[in-house]
Image 1: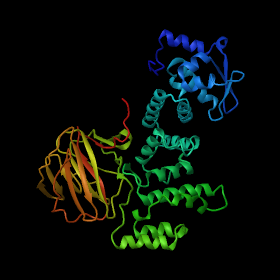
Image 2: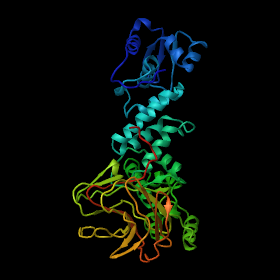
Image 3: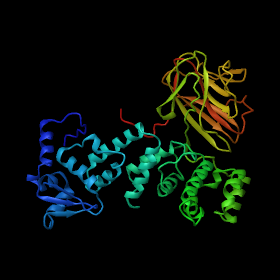
Image 4: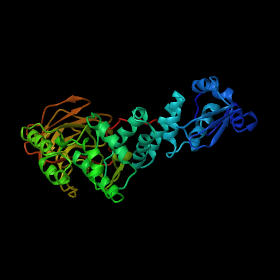
Length: 435
């Protein structure tokens, strides 16, 4: 079909077809949409370009009118534009209409157009703010039926939201139905996830309290359907006592079972999925970009430290990877007490770290570790919070646990220390963006 969706230039044939699309002399069919607006077109073009239209037009069409109760006129205009011209103008696909257009493209079985829409959504996610994905998932859950909603679009949006920490102090566009779907699809996820379970609960609670402002039946009405997708085994006893019990959502038997699991050491990690974090922008000549996943030193030759925004705690076993995009002099990667004071810029590193020179460091102690890394390498940190141990790998070649590190605290953060000319990226290539 010659798929060229750019609106920069149109060959003569496509330009002529666009003129044909807007020339009412060639209209011989009416498409009545769900909002009762009528879009006109040419039977021959629609039937030739779409098997669905072909079937509808040549199987008992009455009065040259087709009615669509699940497609509005805005979406139908975009579909007709694609069928006529094999492309759509960029301004005709927006955050506000792209989910409904995607729904229509599935209805008409336009596989190549669906792929383009998916790519456009990825561009929206890349260029817009974090709320865009929440808005789109909410729309997706609203537009698609329960049987239809598990599609490529919803999977991408769920993965995107999972990689961005949900914040209780921000009003966002994630609807309660969208939130319920998100919690359900990620309950047992093995993909990257940024929000600890207790913070998920706090986010849900904040959401439901906002709803309660407009509803007098109380917060429980909204909490109960969501609470089934919260895993209490990912919280500690104090968190459950302070944050969960006061709302009487869970039965005494359910709480007793959770506390027993903790007592016998069967609690789960504090976060679902594979933990993922962003760098906490603190200035000091460190530039954070790529949605928070990349940090680059731009000012000081002396290494400056930066923390990740995730606190590892509890009894889980975790790992994460850092890509060395640029390297100049020594870079240090590892873990740090979440209460560490980073303002002492005389220190080259903080915490328990692996240097690019192949040594491991803590305080003033160092030891050869035989794990040098260079530009382009992938460094993975392996953290066992139950045993309070740490190990590293370079390009998946895992080394031994650093046995000298016997004082790793109960709560630690990812940390990196880098100087001018170095650039690091948290590996998070769950969604591949087209360049």
